[in-house]
Image (cartoon, rainbow, N blue to C red; front, top):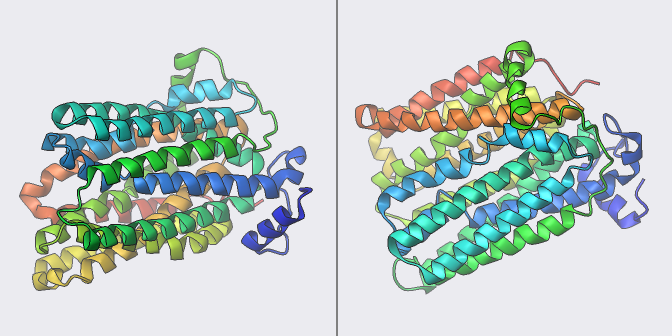
Length: 442
């Protein structure tokens, strides 16, 4: 095992298992490095998730564009660019990753590019205004999102090579919990800013400094991730570039297990897509802006803090059951919001109700994310894992863009109706997940 007793001690306490040093499904040479790799991966996940909290496309980025006087239509592109841009090119990225024996360097490259993009966004906030600021930030967000694709494909493969199968869920769980704590801190600071800062809270300099701090976090994460001990892996399938990459799409036809997983995952996007509609519904019912968003931000952070380790340990037992139960929970929250909006509208004006439901929805979303991330890593080995991640994320990127059209139903069925439609998707996804085999069994 690791030659550092302190590292081993911290690892044993975090894993909290009598068989904490058991190595399964990873190369024998990687076994002794598990404690150190576990902690290094945990720290980098924590740092990047903190960066994500500071550069939030649903909160801080819209506020920044508004404070700079960018056109309102640009706000609608923030989330699609941020989420889909990192997924759509992953088929091509995976082809390059497969040609690398040591794949952590692809993650490092992606993290450095993200840091540069965020630093340039901070510079744009200081020096530009209006439409020029908006276009600059959107362009940088595109590059930022694409660079996340580099990290996404490589990170799951490195995780599969360095961390035993029954330790991957708890690793993600602790990272989510730490990110939740930081999100709570950011929310408290935001609320404190409203108390001590005059005006609407849209201080451009404050956001710019926050973005600069986020850029530093990604740089530090890159340095730490570079020290992970990764054994050289297979390089088969790394030929013919983009054409070879797109040939992997045949997995959707030939691999029924993978196809069912992707259908379930697509339907469970409801846990993420419902969240902004709950926030918008609250904004319509209550005369509050930044303070209300801070309250939702705190609810999200608290949900990650309390649920991350639970979902992580549960996922190490059965990531399939985590997806089923978390998906059902998200769907039921949406149905409850719809029923209240239809038959008890006055309740929506209670300042505690929608943030409380958002808290439960956030717990469910954490379960869906941890469940599907653990499942896809555990369902395959070697290059096949890279193929699953790249094909799956590319398809989900397309689905995310298509799901944007669901919001066009709002004039016809209202916000609560859209939430109900998304909840129906969640029920379907949970049912599809019951058809999946267990992957945690050795």
